[in-house]
Length: 130
Image 1 (cartoon, rainbow, N blue to C red):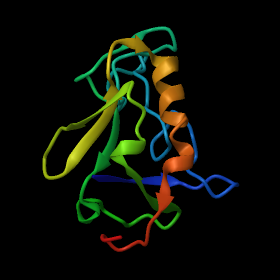
Image 2: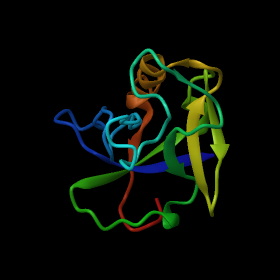
Image 3: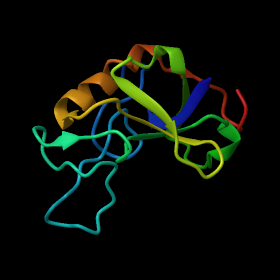
């Protein structure tokens, strides 16, 4: 299965790695602003992230992604290129999935595993279907 995600493009033409929206990485919790959107419960690099508690959002069907932002690129990765330490899980609705930690691990390790997939993400044509 291919997974699709909108992300910013870095200077080298690959997905931008980071802990902000539209980057290859997850947004940590912000204990000073609980209303701020986060992808995981952990707030610091040493706090644990766990399976079934959030992760990197992507979609199995690119038609489920709103492709309005011009500064973003639609990317895809084959599920087989996701490291075995990570879990790809359908979280719904539609074709929404998370790439999550397969076991409990520190947030920094999870971010590093996600960043290690950078070379496997391929740019796709905009418009909903590859």
